[in-house]
Image (tube, rainbow, N blue to C red; front, side, top):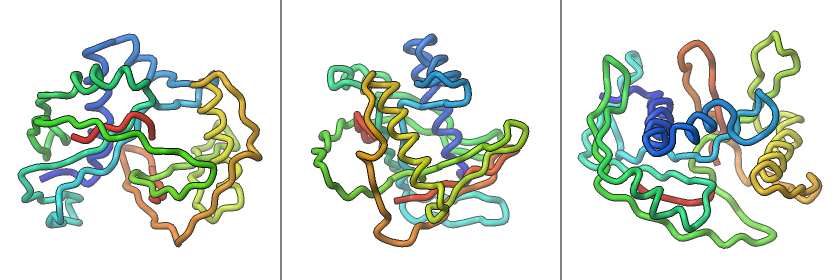
Length: 211
C-alpha cells in the first residue's frame, strides 16, 4: 500500500540522499534554494510521478494498492553535464522506505539512467510530467492562493517565476516579454491535502535521470 500523497515522501527521500553527500548543499536547497527572498524556496530539482501501472484505489483510505514489481521515476536536476556520474552514484543501490508510519513500500534503486538532453528551440511544445504550481500571497498574514491556469494572473506570475529562476541560477537577466506560452488543451487539476495545507498543481527540468 502506498499513500496517494507519496510525492511528499519522494521529495524527502531526494533531500536525504543529497544530505548524505553534502549536508551544507542539502540544507541550502531546503532552507533557501536559489533566490534572494526568504519566501522564494526555489528547488534545483523536480520529479515525475511514479510509474507503477494501474493500481487498485482505496479512496476512503487514500491509498494505492500496487501490484507492479518494478517502479520507475524521472528526476531532473539543474546541474552541469559533468555532474551526471556524481548524481547517478548518489542514487544507485539506494534502499529506502517510501511512505508514512502506517503504509508504504520498501524500495531499492536497481538502475539509474541518464536521459539525453533536450534540444531547445525558440518555439517549442512542452508536456509537463509533474504538476505546475503557481501561488500568490497578497497578505503575509494570509495563506497563499494557488492559481488556476485560466486565472488572469497565472501567465504573468509564471513568467515572473521563470525569469527569476533563470537570473538567480545563471546570473543573467532576461526580459519577461521574451517568454510567452499558451495551453493547447484544457488543464487537469491535480492535488491532495498534505499535512495542514492544500497543495494543487496543473499538469501538462535539466539533468534528467530515470530510476
